[in-house]
Length: 120
Image (tube, rainbow, N blue to C red; front, top):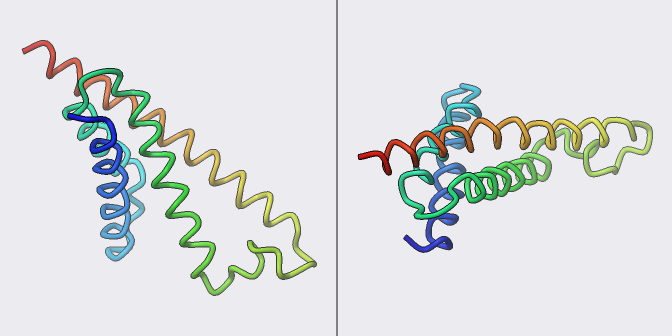
């Protein structure tokens, strides 16, 4: 399958699954990363780890931006409250660590799914 379609599929499925898990009040970040990795590993024809990292990074950035914009406490993250500048750095640091952690998990699951598919 074409890489653009796989990237869009990974991003949309990641955002949809994150939305479902947040509605159920479940922290499903690791589960979503594994599912997106398996989907990407099954659909892509070459180098699924790279495209999984791109998909997971993109949907995590989109979800973090949505949370920062629509959260009632977003004044702190957006820098409108001048007294808490350290919170902005903490937020961005947590987002970067989350992206790295979930990308590693998702790329490992994509690697496993790709190798299981190609060993048949």
